[in-house]
Image (tube, rainbow over all chains, first blue to last red; front, side, top):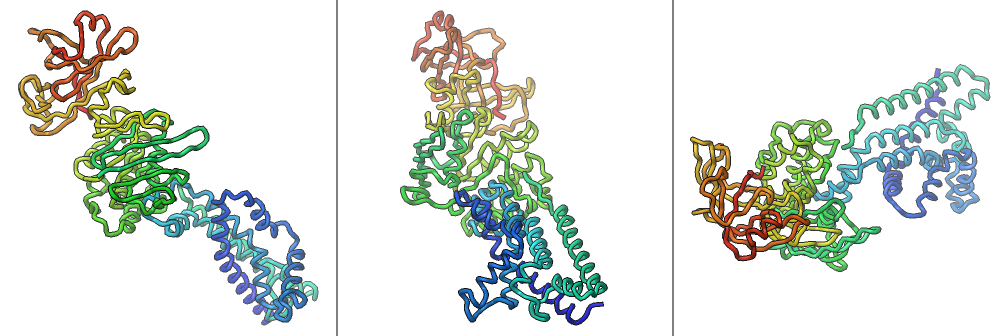
Length: 219
Length: 358
């Protein structure tokens, strides 16, 4: 079944995905709210930048991050390449659209009338955001959290480029599978692949199932 | 105390330029045709129109001035939107608590009082998406009152409702009028609602104030569009003075009562002493120089001609006064000539139909 190295890879994967999702929710929520509300002319450029990781080969993103974070980059001897921190930074870029886009969609769907009603009921803009917008956009938060997490679990190219493959430090499950296959250890590759397949399916099932139950009816 | 409004806004080919000083008591109806800027004015007063310029003061509190604008959540207004806009993620009680928790310590009506006034005690645990239109509006009204507003803004709360729902909400608005001392601005384009609820009237046309003043006077001003309409009517404030149980009639005294200052109305349900509003349509009033001795018409009032105004090619609109109470009569130009009608003339108004405003 799973070796110690596989379990270490599992823990690193979960830690990476959890931390990345948390950071993305903090960064993505204000960004998505701004994108959903702004009438600034430069908005499409920001949206395109956010969506880039959807279409870019992960190796391209990984390459630039390696250049930026590596020993020959601006960080010099504080290089973050081949460290867990470097992996987190890479994952945040890589999974950004999977968190921002569902949130932006959910925020845009919140009827302006609710915000005005809240204002006439003495709620400040900040109060309105937390007591009206967040609950109404709950399906968006759920989708964003699960997609951000699941997508980070499945990342490969970026990790390989900037994280390398250091067992116990930067080796994640997807790379462990790759290594098992390289070494013709198909049985072990099966265990991890099957596990990831099941996990991904369960996570998505949760999103679709819960979003149906939380469906918010408009006026 | 008064509400001083001097607001300007231009948006595309629509411009709002309203200058008015409204008494901050009772119900002031903002009346006018669709698209004249009624709702925009109400939203501007609540602070919901960011592009508006000018001055706005309630009593000695400035809400807006050049270079100063109080954000909407700091203005002590209660706002009832045309479509209620209840929060769908909260129950009825949750919606009410949302307002109550943010109302501060200002003196306002209590929770139980408001719930009773709106008649929503049985709805508190319901979820809002399943309420009927009338129920939603009553909850929205209660929610607005729980913010302890110093000014209540109602944006056509009856417009989106069917007859049944209107009949539920109307008494609730009347109780509000009677029991709370909060001044109300009420946007409407239905003259019957206005006749029933309003004390003052602000007439808007094309984003400008056409006229403003007490309801009873405004309805009968011959220079305004109201009196020119087919539905032209006068409103009389009266008190139930007696019930005739034999004939099932109610006697109503107006303008202090006494000789010729009474009207009879079919029905005997109202208690003596109740104050009511009566509507007398211009088309239901005819004029005669002599009091008829034998007539089926019960309501004959001695009046004076106040002013005349042509109403189409064949008719004339006549404003009458019974003491201080104005009335309207629509007569043919032929009758005007036959009776030789002129201002100051004393004659008798025969009222074919009086209705309670309800």
